[in-house]
Length: 194
Image 1 (cartoon, rainbow, N blue to C red):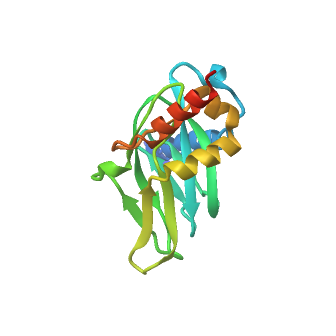
Image 2 (tube, helix red, strand yellow; image 1 turned 45 degrees about the horizontal axis):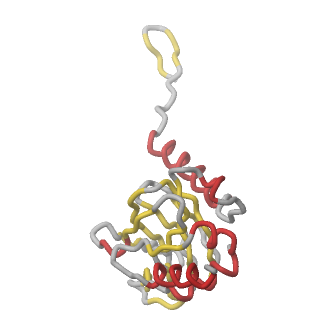
């Protein structure tokens, strides 16, 4: 309360805009994470959307994975997980990864490293790489990698999302060229043709 010329007036703190933005991003990320296990087909995907294969091998807790569009994926489970995320077509990058060590924060900033970039093509399943967080670490470093495991992921996708793989096909979406998925898709199409 502040007294002004014989009056008492209440002063309320100004809202913290960054907190509001963070909460909004968190809500969006939670919604995307909850919708990650897809059951829809290409007709329900939307004309400007594709799927990102989120394939992770997490050996120790990683609290945040942030994409260049602001999407934050929180608390991926330990072990291996493969799921599809619906994203608008365009260029993306894994920009920040938080991997705490007890109470010490550890953030990996990938802003200057193009290997963490990928492109989502519409009406496709887009595999950009597998995100790996090593189980062991030093006190000042943690092993986090983004590696290409195309042959392994194709088998996992065929097992978990067979209708999606058949309807949409799988492409490599990473920042460098890899023709394995395209060749494998062509061979599968030729084998099923009469």
